[in-house]
Length: 375
Image (tube, rainbow, N blue to C red):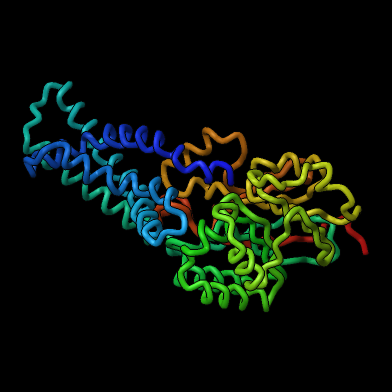
């Protein structure tokens, strides 16, 4: 990961490929705009591509104040691009079906279909933004070999930075506090990218420190936490009262909690070494940001694996595509032979501040003693 970030100019071919793809997908929208405004096609393409490419450009400007603005514009444009192109491609498909059925498609019909597509886009985008501001609580009961019930809250993917900031974090912490947990488990991606992108870091620290002063907070790192290494990020996390477990374990109540480094971390310990020496006879809870590692954990004795990373697909149709493509569960509770995996959709978001068909959430884990457990 660090090596790739160092080769920033390798992003130039990606920019060119992305520009061609975005231009092609924007053709239905361009053609509709030219019915209303008879301006040169290249001008529409320039206006369309400039914000779309700003996200990739932002990765080439680490530490520069302009990068933050480019990134925000680019992230918003991801959502605009997704739903605007989907709406206009659907409208173009309807007009095409009208043509092959023998109906006449006049310019008036084309203009009207474009306005309907624009309205559909606006409603979908607005609904996604509103939904992204709400934090749901999902409850899962898990039986383990423990002596007394425990209430744990799992959250992941705060992505503190560009959009998840001073207003979003207090909402998340309030939702957690209402569950009255015995401990909070944070499955990675605490910071979105660069420390410089944290708006009002002292406020973030105050809010999270308020939570950790009431209940222990254990965490593992995520792939975004590896981006743009900075000692201030490490100091920020420590100052929040978060116990970051980097291939380390702690004994807490009847549990052993092991936090794994992210799969993209070059310092990640091999499985045999990471799971060696753990206390026997105690349920093992593993925090691992990427759910793709859950079988590795199960094979090494984990009773409960907690992950995030996938955001549950974050927004339609990404949730459907991820379920089809990914070789591991992207969301929900899976169990096999008494072992459990819980993948949360995350309390924050990456990219556009949108949630369509997927919710922001924290997960209340009710750990219950198994029937055969004795003192």
